[in-house]
Length: 100
Image 1 (cartoon, helix red, strand yellow):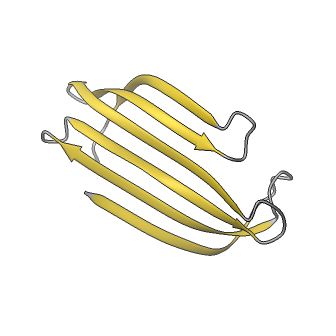
Image 2 (tube, rainbow, N blue to C red; image 1 turned 180 degrees about the vertical axis):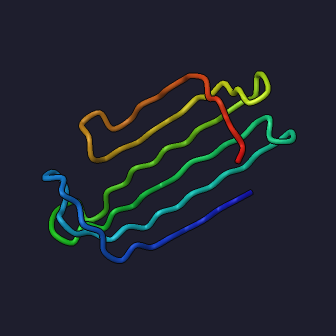
């Protein structure tokens, strides 16, 4: 299991729909099973808006992958984004993984 957390004290953003300056807490995780044939990974970005509402804005993404051939995974993904009107979304597809 891998888990990382980072705090970015000050970020600037040119997006007119966001606060021009904000702090961000960024979290990432990954867990794999069956010798990396199945994995769950994702992130959560929590933006602290210094000028404006809401005070905390969240974007998360979570992906489940299952290996179906060498380097090829079937994936299912869930995303939640408070910055857009359609906040939740699901995706399904194939992923080609190249280790480096």
